[in-house]
Amino acid sequence: MYTPPDIYLGTDDFAKLVLNSNVFVDKSLFVKEFLEDNGDVVLITRPRRWGKSLNMSMLRKFFAIEVDRDGAPDLQRQSLHRKLFVGGEVALDSGETKQLSALKIAQETDLIEGYQGQYPVISLGLKDVKGESYDEIVEKLQTVISELFKVHVHLLKSSDVTSQEKMLYRKHMQEESSEAHLQNSLYFLSELLCRHFQKPVYILID
Image (cartoon, rainbow, N blue to C red):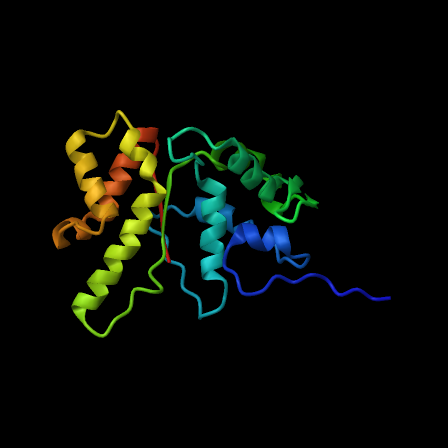
């Protein structure tokens, strides 16, 4: 009796798609293409529903250094994200296990060893920042930036961040930053991440 494959729909989360769907189009060599681009800024233009957000999620899972709220390496997430690309057995939320196949990017061993899980990443989604007035848009942007800073809350425990910078960091988290600081928020966060990890930062804006 024919059993249709499991197709996981309605997500732009790369990890969820790989883990929960038996149908997956391997676009992982996009990572290589991205790295081979010589520009400081890479603009990706495609029509709606062509997988831009999914590709951004894939880049984040590929590059990001995974740490917990205390700034310690999150070995479980690091291991999972690596297996998404190179393959291996993973435990699913259902309690079952799944054997992942290696993606095409796994053949690029230099890229896997040199980049996978090796860089701080800022991933910012602006799809929901909409409004009928300037003030409404600023308010929603405050919320998005607040959630972004909460992702990197471990910086508040970093010895590389000054007490004054930590005060401003908390204002961003509490949605109390001024409009001028809001305009400078990505630069501020990337500067702190670069200083803490001693590595350049990838900024992904969707």
